[in-house]
Amino acid sequence: MKIMVIYPADAEVRELLAEWLEERNHVIVEVGPRPESWPSALAEHEPDLVLMPQFLEDDPEALAAQSSFPDCQFRILGTNEADWESVLLAADAAYDNRRPKARRFADERRFIIHDEAYRLYASPEKLHRPSNDPGWAQVAAQQEALFVLQLQTGVAGGHQRAKQYLSVLRRFHRQLLQECAYRLGHASYKVVWLREEIARWCTVLCHYIPDAEIAACPAPQNASPDFVYLHHEMPSSFLYPLICVLQFMPRPSVTEEIIKAATWSYTGQSEEELAQTSYLLFGINGFLAEIARSQIWCMDQFLAADSDFHRHSDVSRGLHRAIGATMEFWGWHYLLAMGGGLRAITSRVLTGETRVEPHDNARIVPTFRELQKAMRRTPTP
Image (cartoon, rainbow, N blue to C red; front, side, top):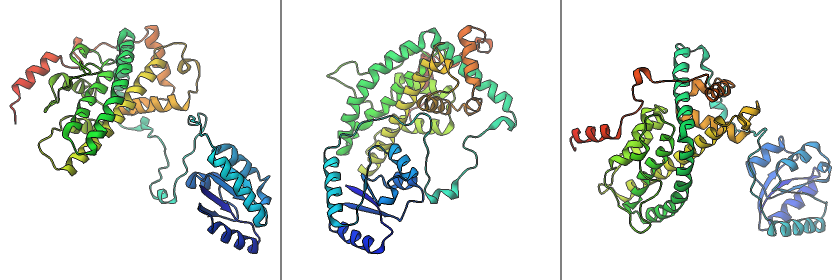
């Protein structure tokens, strides 16, 4: 058990208490005689138990801390060993019988307390406000058009199909992760399966991209529960959803990592190199899985006129973060800076007031046949 101790002011009692605690088999964090900031001290050390002197029993800051840190026990210390023993016995019993409950992040406010070392890198602005940047209006208009195209594709049936696809994929992915973790444990190249999962997460996103041929994309799970093929190079049907997503212009840093992970193949690399690539594959899969989930949650809210997003000016923290993650993934930081503008755009799309058509009916992404032709023309290295 990790114990945070706020020592009494009396020097003699403090010394006795320190000696007494040394004899116990606990991790001791000393704070005293009073935390400069209760939330900061508790968030930094995450103790299981806080022992504090009598004079802090009714302290407003201590009481507020108790409600903010529900998993932590707060106990008042007496002035002698008998008191300390009874307090610790009760705390030990409560610790042994604890039943932690899962809970969500706070919706209304959630503070990030920074280590002092981060002061060097602190930025005065949390979010880049680009309204004064050169070319702001043109870039914002382009990003709004891309966003509207996704909304239109979702309304036309893409959203419901994406939800069905994701439902199957998530179940399949959980099984595959276990399999690949086992392969990684003994440095097996079979972890390359995760490379193809990248294409499946991108297929979820393709359901919102106009002209993307979903029928040419991989299914959300292997065709057979008994047999699976281990490709050396990524096949065209798996490359196609990646190309569609990348054509829709996500952030450059995202594009680079997806390309790096998707074009990797095993050519006899050492165990160390294989492990490094495996961690990249695990990481990019986890990231894209969250983006896929966020995209669908956002579209659930954007495309339903009676959703919380449309009925309330403030949204939950979770939805706020999902919108931010989705917009940043697609590189729509200008659009994200519009704040309430998203609600106005989605409302106009739902009522039919706003519609975007590609210039001269040009395709947004290539056809699968075009990809196959391009691959046949590309010489094998």
